[in-house]
Every structure is written in structure tokens, then in C-alpha cells.
Length: 423
Ligand code: ASP
Ligand code: MG
Image 1 (cartoon, helix red, strand yellow):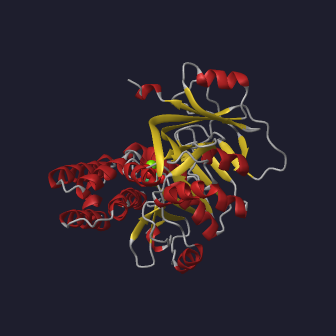
Image 2 (cartoon, rainbow, N blue to C red):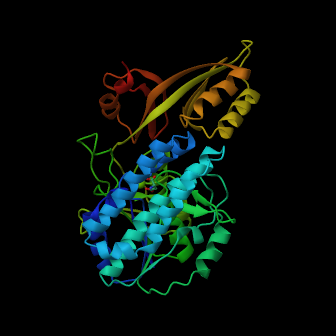
Image 3 (cartoon, protein in one colour):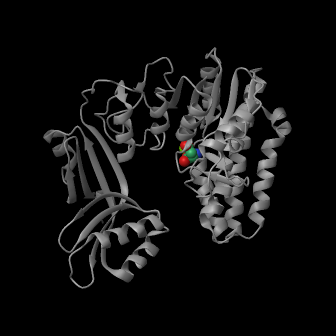
């Protein structure tokens, strides 16, 4: 078995769906195809969730229609209008969503988010299924929620590997060629939909690779492979042909957007190689991520994470910052799902750079403020340079004000003001 994962950019319109089907058609071996929601659909579904949760029915209705029309138009663009009418599951999901929007939301935002946002992957996979069938390709659509079993940590669900394995083995896959399913989504033992975190389809691909004992995973992207910098922002970016699991996990951890951070571990554990390739140039080699014996010499790799917050926390009574304080602070971060990107302590002050959901930040600040003195700066940028050189650092820090910095043997990190956000 081989896993092929297609992200939002590779399924953004009718042309890209045709491209996907031609890539898959050329694979003369059994594959599992994992797809994301089309283009920016997840963002639009997030808007829908917001409108629903804040009880703005007119806005919710407008966003719903926009999503519906966008997907229906894809059927037409594919010349599938007569099939679209028959595409019952597709219409059912929209019907279900519409009904949901007419009911009052619960008080749990993250729960409501998952109930709405998971639909994006259902829509894209259902359209692709119809297209494959129309082309006479032997395919079987599988609802990923019947396989990926999770706990109920909405928006960042944790996979139960044991029950997922059992569920996978129970699936009756008749198609000998293509199993088509969704990334990003799962369900609790009670059958309630969950999501694995933004960009989580990569992770689904890795989970399915382990469950099915696949030989490899290919992630199809709109870039030639894993680059040493974001090609959309830096003209000096270049492809890295081979990297180790170790390096990939570090890059993902520091915020490289190329692969979802949870993806590498399951693949590394089973030594399943991962290929990152361009769907625009499917014949090109891309990047290979695998176990390597000898460390590969790499040039500097640049990773930029926006939207960071720097908190400066100190005990109210001017006492030293002690382990017990730090442990309290981390408990609160854990409670509000704030991810610590970097931290540093001095005698009476603990500086922490966190990546925090905008909704949760005010409550986190209030909670911390009850026990500590807290100062904070928002809209910061965290620049990480792996395999740094002094030229690389100079290049990235030009004209930037550094608020916090740390260097280890291989990695240099700088928290800077995001110039685009300073007025
Ligand atoms: N559609 C989801 C997102 O955009 C999951 C994914 O694309 O991997 O975050
Ligand atoms: Mg996406």
C-alpha cells in the first residue's frame, strides 16, 4: 500500500482535481488517497463557525451559501452536472449542515468548530469520488471518521491508535486500487466528529500509513519539496533533496509549514519514508525524508512564525521566580492551550514567548494576572535559523528589533517585532 495526500492547494479547483486524478491514475498499485478541503474552504468554514457561534444568522446564511455555491460550481466545471444531482451524500452533508445552523449553538466553541469545519473534507472527497467514478476509475470512498478514533479534545484531537487499528481492519475495502478518504477529521467513540488541528491532513496520512502497513507516504504540494525558506517570501529559497526524520521533526516543531508537526513521529517509529513532491511537476524528485545513518550537512534553514506573544511574568512581591511559580505558569498555559515557543528566566522575571489562540489569550492573561504581575507584547515574529551562520543571522535580522534571543549548537532563535504590524 502507498499513501498519497493532497492538501488544499492541490484540490483548489476543477483543473487541480483533474491533475490529482491523473497523478493517481498513473500509480499502478494500490493506494490510499487522503484529501484536504478545497483551497481555502477551511478558513471559510471557520468564518461560518464564528457567525453561528456568535448568533449572527444572516451572516451564517451568507457564508453557508458561498461555500455551497463554490462546491456546486466545481461539479459544473468538471462537466458533472447530471452526476451532481445524483451525488446524494454531497447534498446530504449540506442538508445536515443547514439544519445544524438552525439550531442554537452549545457553549463549547471548540466542539461547535469541529461539527462545522469537518464538512470541508467531506465535500472535497465526495466531489473527487464522483469524478473518479465518472472516469471509470475503481475507487472506494471511506469516511475517515469510521477509522480515525480520537478523544474529545476538539480542534486538536488525540488519536486512539488501538481502536483506530481495529476500525481500519474492520473496513471492507472492495476496491483493489484506490481507497479515497479525508484528512484532518476523526470521531470520538460516540461518533462525534473531531478534527486533528489545522493542516492535520498530513497527520492523517501518517496514521493511515501505520494502520495499513504502507511502504511510503507522498505529500503533494505546490512547492518542489521541503525548502530551506518559504518561497513565497524569500527569493533565495531552495529545495532540500534529502532530510532525516530528526531534522524534519525539528523543522516542523519550529514552525516550518511544510509538514504538520505530529506527522513525523508515527512514520519514524515504523521507518516509513515520506516524499514531499510538487503536484505541478509530478515527474520531479521532490524531497525524501527517511532514516539516515550519517548526519546530512545542510545550509541554513529559515522558519518564521507570526502572531507570537511575549509574556513577562514576575511574582507580585518582588521575590525570586522559583520552580513552583514556573510550574503554576505552565499549568495555566496547558489549561488554555497556549504553546510555549521559547522561554528565559532571570531573578524575578520569567519571559515566555507563546503561541496562543486569540480567543483564549485575554482569559489566560486574566488568570495569570490573578497570581502574578504580567506584562505582554503582541504581534511578534519568531525567527528560527537552523544550521545558522553569522551571514544568515545578519540577513534575517536586518532592520528588526530583537526582544529575546537564544542560540544552541544548531539553532538560533530571535523574537522580533513584526514590522508589518508596527504602526
Ligand atoms: N483543511 C484543513 C486545514 O486547512 C486540514 C488540512 O488542510 O490539512 O487546516
Ligand atoms: Mg488546508
